[in-house]
Image (cartoon, rainbow, N blue to C red):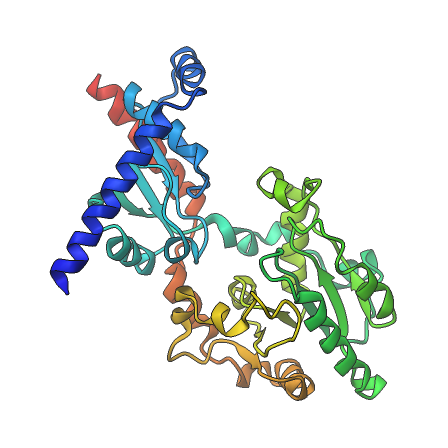
Length: 358
């Protein structure tokens, strides 16, 4: 088995090397080389390691002896796809993610995998972003006497979110009015489908839509051109701060809410729609969900009949459910503070080393 694994890794590396040689021949490479010779950067940071075009950039940097650094930017990036560019250094969230790198990329020197923490959750610790709750409720015309449940949408790789959210809203409507929480819908920033529009209108009496403040693409295919704004960083911070519970299909929002020690609910039951290719059991069978193994870190809705009970548990006794959410957060992030500063110091050190070696 060990010999077979080594053989497979050797072939994977050969394929990666062949691909990168092709990327080096990209027609855009000469213009990129001319630009880098003109601007003379000391170091390059690539924040999206899955974009194939980054490989051309990395190969030109290699030719010009410019350190090229890439970041593993999400918890599922390593198990779900190969890193596209061959980098000088790889930035990872935590010791857990570094072990993943060693498993998936045994030929990458471990000294080149640097644990810095992730900037993804840094905003939550910035008190200057925290609005008073009364101000937040008034800004978005939210009820002052209701618990708040955030429905957090995914992109179109999760095509049934609007159907699941309709189940949630239907169940909430069956509750006595005095016990009903108020729902807030936040679409995925790159979801340009409009699939939630009819749902939001149907349940307007118990639901408020608060859309992300991103530079929005014209379509789902333009997702990589969609960028967050500083205003949305503050908005997301206050949604997590002031909502009592988040409901979602398996995204990192469970970690976002854990930063405020609040529970998350993952929806996990089949729907008949898109059944020919979309299987929720397959989704939760993906490798990155193994980080939940052995931990009581999130609440699960496993059937429509579970909805009210699970949501009430999360709202009424948050301290008694998903009790290991902080252990899960620490497992994935190491709770490393000041990740941005850590990354900046690494880049400055690489730039200094480069100048000293010239």
